[in-house]
Length: 369
Image 1 (cartoon, rainbow, N blue to C red):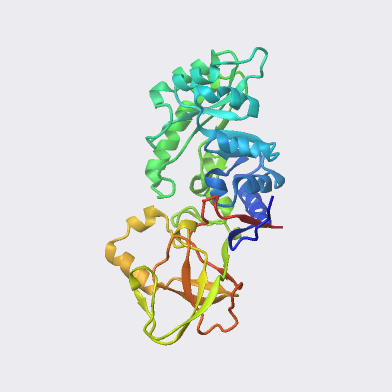
Image 2: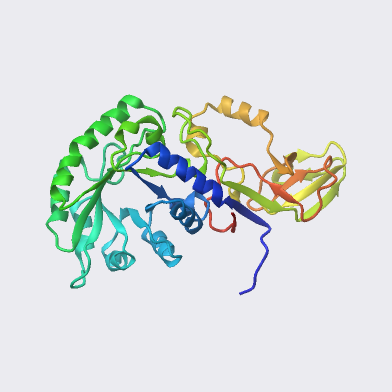
C-alpha cells in the first residue's frame, strides 16, 4: 500500500484521553463502571484509537451507536464489553452473537428479532432494555417496561443484562424535569431486575448527568463529552483538570503575494487593503473547520450571533501566532493572512481552532503517546 503524508489531519493525544478517563472514573466513584462512548467516530478522535486508549486506561465497557462500529472495534482487538446503543435488526442478529456484543432492546419486536436464528448451544445474547423517560426517540414507554422485560426473560438464548435511559435535558440543566425523569426511571428499574436471572447493570447518567446528579450513578455511567476534554454544559459543574485531547492541523500548500485590491474567496467578500502575503491551507468546512454545534447557535438572537461573529475574527495559528482567515471558508480550502509572519512558508504547519473535533473519518488521525 502506498503511504501518503497527510496535508491535513486530526492530532489525538492518547495520554490526555487516558487522563480524562481516570478523572471521570474518580468522579464516578468506587464500584461504578464507566462506559466510554465512542460513537461518531470516537467523537472525531477515531473510534478504534479512542477505544484502545480507554481500554488501556481501565475501561471495561465501550458504547457505540451501530453494530458496524462494534465490528470495527472487535477487528482491531478491542476486548471490552461493547454495548450497541440502538436496536439490532433480525438480519444482523447472528453477527451480533458472533461479535459478542451487548444489544439494546426497546420493544417486543426487538426481542423477537434477536431471538431469531439462534444456533444450538450458543451462549445467551446479553440485552439492555432502554426506557424512554422523556427523550421521545427510542425506548420502552413506562407502561411497556414490564412486558418487554418479561419477553426477554422468557426467551431462550437471551439474557437481560442491563436497563438504562437517556436524560434529554441534563445539558440544559432543567433540574426539576431531570429529577422527575430520574425518579420515573428509578421506579421502573425493579421490574427489570425482577425479570433478570442475575445482576443487572443500571445506567442513566451521561456527562452532564454525572456532574449534576451523582446520587443517580447506580452501577454504571455512560460518558462521552467529558472524556474528550469538553464540559457538557455551561450550567453543569466543571470537572477540574480535564485535558485537551485533539488539534486540527494542516500544512501550507502555497504562499502567495497578492496586490492591493485583490479579492479572496467565493463572492469576493474580502478585498486586500495593502499588498498581502497569504497562505493557502487544505482545510475547510467539509473538515469541520468553523462548524459550531447547532443548538447553542440557533438559540441565540440573530443580533447577538452577528455581534459575536463580528467581534471574533476567524484565524489559524502558526506556532501560537494568529493569522486571520480571509474571505469565506470553502469546503476544503482556506486562505490566511501571513503578511506579518515571514517565517511561514509552504509546508509550515497551522493549527485551526475549532469548537468541536471533526467527526468525519476522511481526515486521518495521528496519535501521540
